[in-house]
Length: 324
Image (cartoon, rainbow, N blue to C red; front, side, top):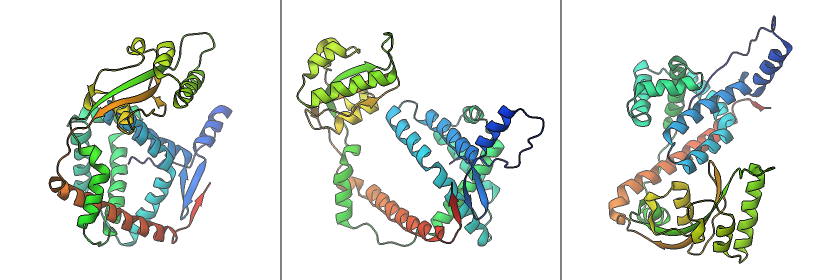
């Protein structure tokens, strides 16, 4: 994660009342860990920097982007609290991070997230107001956190054949290839162009339509009357399509439905969309034996994470944490 430490010592002389007020709010303390304050502006800058990178990484997958953005926003304060705790624990053991480790970490990010384009990486950082130097400082702290967590991932028994089989059956949809879907949609634009139209009003319309359909209303009739996409004249009906050829948010929503099911409202950039799953043709998944090594690795990662979570819970009790 990207973390930005700001100065909490502000000179209030020779500034307007408006500026003072903005700085006061920006530097409101949201938490203190062992006497180290975490400011609201630090939380904001952490979120902003992470969001910019995520938007670049997932620009073609709105559903995943929305999910990861929501997680970043929801966990920002607790992540910064945990960071301070782990940095303190690292100092206790006299830990040192070599500069080469930080260089390798940044080069990996550029290679994997920016296809090796360092200029694109620097441009994305600049959009958040963060320099490469500051980013490097934050990545060093992140490496410290990872080192401390790795030290306490602990020993655990290897994945059993039963655990592997259960994991495979639970996640088989993710590995299956060749899925085809037949769907119908109703697309309600966020702004209709009519006087008094608003995003909330349009969302309410989508909610009312979905409620009527779930309670037995005619999907095709509603699509013809209200939908504004290229399928409206056909009652919202689409031809058969490969899952991989559809927008991920729509495809994933349809695949989670049983045939005849109606999705929750999907909030896209310009529209509220209701998806009906008319039919599905499932493709084929790799056999369990082929997936076994990967599944065993994922199960072991989950067990390690549980050990780390248990350790973090125990050391939080040893530090003085105040949340505001």
